[in-house]
Image 1 (spheres, one colour):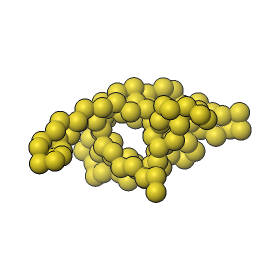
Image 2 (cartoon, rainbow, N blue to C red):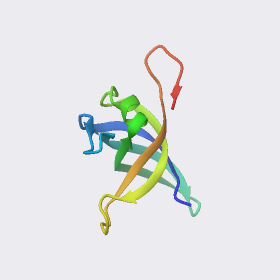
Image 3 (cartoon, one colour):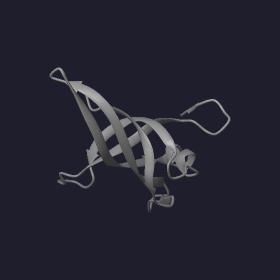
Image 4 (cartoon, helix red, strand yellow):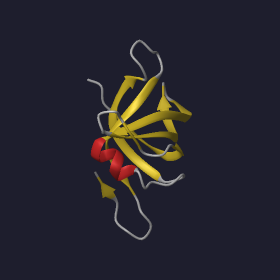
Length: 105
């Protein structure tokens, strides 16, 4: 099964665009930091990952700001057919807005 859950900050965000078929697309780069235990030892994980959202999810994320914290769920896919570069396709997200409860989509 190809499922991924990740939390992190928006490090880059491109303007909302539309495919030739009219589907909204938002491209982001997320930064993640965490500590995990592997083989009985603590390990610090720091990474950046390319992410994309399509359709209603893209429209709902389009007003996001750099540095905003998101928890996302989605799947990994090659950036292009035959490419080894992977992109996280966001299908659900949760974000905390100032002075409000978390929003889950």
